[in-house]
Image (cartoon, rainbow, N blue to C red; front, top):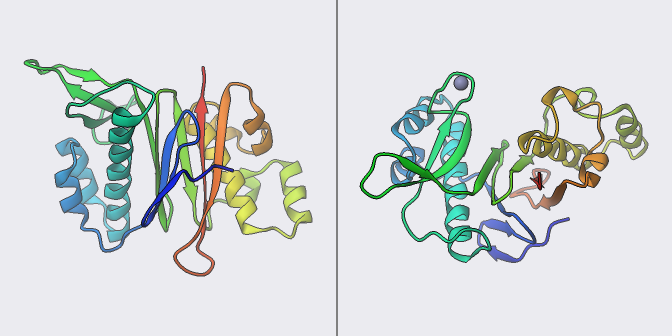
Length: 236
Ligand SMILES: [Zn+2]
């Protein structure tokens, strides 16, 4: 389980090793349009956030990007990675259609006197569930996931052996969502194919020599709505 190095009100911060990551409860009082306007993201990303129909989805969209940028600023100023004191921007690009409002996130710095943008060598990942947002930054490829409740059917997520172990323990919701976050994090850092959830156990993924895995149970804001969160960093 991850260590909590310090706690900011309303936010759990975890950075025990090569990744800086955090989980926040979803803040329903947040005004997503105002948050996105204040963030260094592209107009295309702002427009996509505004198009989401549900208020909670717009909040999660804005809050996850705000958290990722806050962690990136922390990492660049206080971390062990590259030092960067200037402005930075969060961009996205889709490898399939070339769209600039979705797809893999990256941090860039505007080059002085040129339109060309310079890539900052930090990897960024974020996730949201019904009640939480999570984000991670690392000099290594990283993937973060947070799950509150629900999700796909266990048969899609778990191996046959995991289902048997889960059954034997009375099907605890927290165990299922923890295993699910491990597998989602593995997909996001490029270790696992999204169709292969049922083929590799979370335990095997965590033991893989090329990754470091941290997981944490996050207290909920009310009874029964705690979350599980995992981040995986890949050293390859
Ligand atoms: Zn696309």
